[in-house]
Every structure is written in structure tokens, then in C-alpha cells.
Length: 210
Image (cartoon, rainbow, N blue to C red; front, side):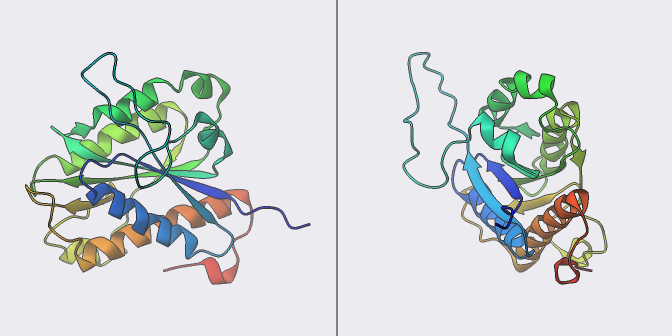
């Protein structure tokens, strides 16, 4: 019986859909690598009303993440919209509840990357990406960026950073993802999957990218 493919977890929070679209592109890049499967998961919103609870299943999009998803994954991509140069509270709240996985080292040594979407072009993309790296480093993950071997980093006039894929969604959240942003998101997913396979063993020649 063949062993199951390594699972790469794509974990995101999306308010208006832009970060979700980036997550789907990253998942596309992951699944372009033979031998890897993407698992899309999200987190519930944080309510200002103490009694409010989220439904067990989201109305649309990916299922809510479970801590077991962290333990089962061979790699992790984390995405959030920008909140004043920081990750959204919903994503921070999730990571605040991962002490057991930190104590057990469940994520230590696994590759990870981050991605974001912002309403304004200079609205804190890089600060948000760096903020999401902090819990990953505390968990002992191998945090990866996007190298300048991706030519779109030099030509993009919207999103895209060496810290991770990003998207400029506009103040109304309706700006479409540009071709450069799409290619960078797919490239990031592909790079993450290849790293996970390399850590697990030799990478097939068909899985290598420039």
C-alpha cells in the first residue's frame, strides 16, 4: 500500500474574500507538486460580544481548523488580512491556543510561509507578514520567504514581497488579484511543498522548479 501524500496546511482568515483567494492560489501551487496535497482551513471571527459563538461549520469556504491539522501537516502556509500592520485578531486568537503543540514540538522543523491582503497599497503588508512569522518561529518552524529568483517581485506594482505573497485589494476589497500576485502566490505554494518533500526525502525531478 502506498503511503499517503504529505499534507500542506493552508490556514487563513478572510473577511471579504481576498485572503481566501490568495489561499486558494497557494493551494494550487502546492498541488502542482507531485506527491503533495493541500488542506485549506480557516478560523472563526472573534466577536466583541462575549456570549456570541461561531457555528460549527462556516457558511462557505474552508472548514474551521482543528489542532490536529497542525499535528498532521508536513508544512504550513498562514494568511491574514492586515489590521494596522498586524495579523487579524481571529488568527492571533487561534495561535494563542496552541500551547500544547508548542510544548510537544508538533510543528518544530516543518517549513512554513505567510501571506496577506491589504486595503491600501502601503497599509502594512510587510508588518503583517512579519507578525505572522513570530508564532511560527516560537513553534520552531522553518520560515520561508519568496526569493527574487521570482521575476514578478521586481515588476509588480501591487502586492508581492520577499516576506511572502500579498495582494492589494483596495479600500472596498474589490480589486482583482493581478497576474503578478497570482504567479507569486502559486510560486510560494510550490516552494513550500517542495521544501516539505525535501525534508521528508529526495524530491522527484518532476517536482523541481526554477
